Image (cartoon, rainbow, N blue to C red; front, side, top):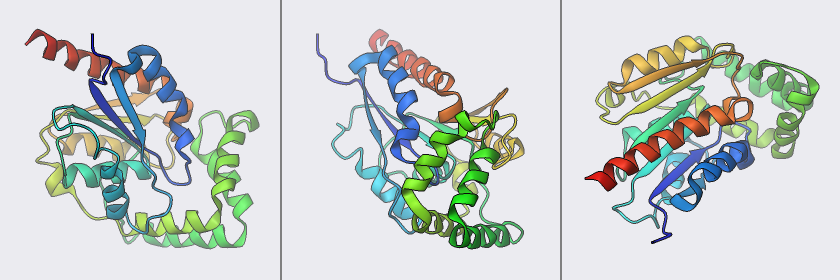
Length: 248
């Protein structure tokens, strides 16, 4: 029996997230599917725009054979990157997961808040990331937020400012997304205060084959707070598609 991967999964981190934000999800996918899935995490730490992040994310799939089904999951800013990829595909994506994100472009109301965040990163980075970690999690305890703060601290204010600028310049992709013809899973924490659930509801209503899942006792940081739930959703769909392929 061949041990070659039957599918590829590309994961995209959010703003001020290291690739490790996906570690718990990856561990559980591998525990359930073993070597059946080749997993890659996109590097979105150095680019100046969302399209540039998407361009480099596509490169993670360059070595994947054309016949291998590819799956995509993006978290927060990584969701913007995933949406850019889905709107301008370079190869077929079988199915996608969009976590704690939105299809809306920057608005006149939100842009000044981004500028305020940039000023905060410049003036007191430590205080700002501490507040961001508390704002983004459900439990908000020091034990819960410490790993997030540590990861943000390691990336530094220059990365935070560059990514914020990229987010502010993201494109309006809604017309293209409304014509998307693949299954899309939209996940959002019920207590997400960074991208509130109304944004996920709008996204799910926009994409024809989207399914919305609102998660109890969850904030914004879904890969960190509920990795088992995300891994289970991904594994169920990949396994189901593989069964259909084998039965055909």
